[in-house]
Picture 1 (tube, rainbow, N blue to C red):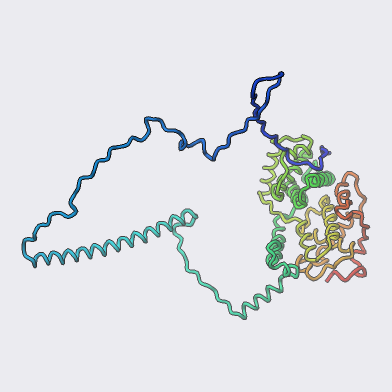
Picture 2: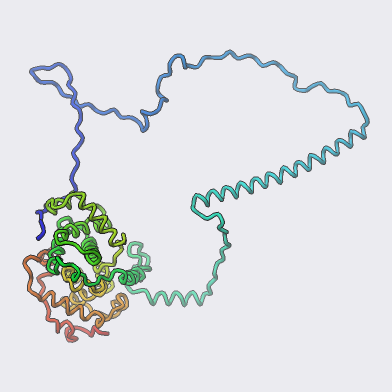
Length: 442
């Protein structure tokens, strides 16, 4: 259905060719050959070619020494004239002058203080204007709330009760943020309600569940070939489903939608996303650059530019961390969860529940851990809350493999992924058998 291009394992962005250097012929030609010398570009300081500081000035602009004339000698003290008149009158004038001078000095001092205050106010106003603070804003006095020691201890005890054991151990780890980890995932759970995808294939006349499964299988192949993060793959599948639930498309555009979804997701989640030319190559040039850019813009508009979509893979890693499971059990759960991406019937389910069901099956198959305690507190789910998903996922695993949809099974059969795809499966009844482990329905 899709045009597949064989992808090199070491595929990467196209390397730019080094700039060619000029070749200069040096010396006389001997024997039909010339000595070739490569011209080395001259180094210059920054902005060295746009200043005239180092240029030699013309002769007519050079400074001409001027003749300096000696200053005429002036007496420092003028001629003193004797005071003629009444001494009392002169004294009165003198005291009045002192009073006037004192008043003028006070006025000048007050004026200077006003100017300084106005200058400070104007300076503050300019700072507020630059910071975007409204002119009519009034600064409020801040007061500190003093908490009693007993109340503070009580609040601390309540906070310690809500923090999980794993988060308590990583309380001061800046990379795991144990203080806020549970709050972050509770926020993810609340955001799930914003991205509930309704069944949409009834409105898609040319697309079937099988076509969607083939598209997801191809997207997994692209993710593996480009060595992208798994978060990128899960987000791309989610964006594809959101787009298909909001607009009717032809089946010829399905591969372009999936490739564009990976392109957008890689920009959101990857440190070095692949180039658009790489996506054109893996589609075997079925679409050109302009079509990719147009689909990218259309996809972003249909999802309202909101790429912070909660995905099941992040919930799975959180649950596994809380349960302190081994990497083999986590990898088995990842295999089950990645297989669920191809199931159209699971599109309408919440990602947090699907992740819980996948981890539960992996724990049963590996006989490691039980669903209780911190797992229930972290996920807010008991086994009965996602029991129907356990049945659906195990039915998916027990169903015969489709040759056209073998990318994920082949991927997780590799030794890098601990060959978890080869682990024997369990009947659905045994998954709820309490004899195989402790009671998980608590």
